[in-house]
Length: 219
Image 1 (cartoon, rainbow, N blue to C red):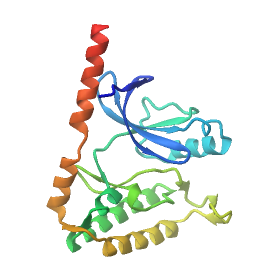
Image 2: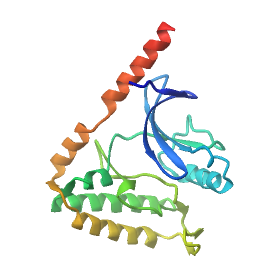
Image 3: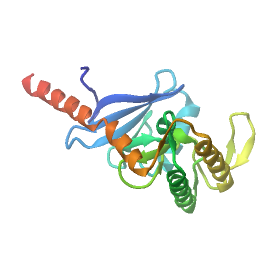
């Protein structure tokens, strides 16, 4: 078993995602073993001014940013950790039943309304960016495309658009279609919670932290 890497005051436990310019790591604080998520720009991307500006904007807009240990101006972002599964991970093998699909859509809509109420447009709603937590309603994650309400934003195709709730509402309609067209084994709310518990990596991560501290004590 590979032991965690040290990253400032954090232990990086496991890389959970990687993209073209950044990667996500599950982490733990060395002091109290609290879980965090670290988003880091990849080598070669960390000096890209455009990506650094985008990361700083995400830092300002992400409601899950940890204001205690996250440091502005550096090529990484530290977020609070919420155990659960992405909606995309569930849809790969399961089909939410009608009641569960309706509940999830309602929870995502409420999350968007709360975001819009504080003047933020998410801008990148899809199943990978919807977290189904072990407890509580669905949450929005990944604020890399988020923008202040009314801001002028350049799209990937070069178009300039005004950040407005209609962008998220259109994505919510697409999400509704994806839930309706999902295939795989049917799953209800109780089944979803069992699936989340079965895939929870907390126990494995706790072993990693314990082994790291044991090695440090023996050194």
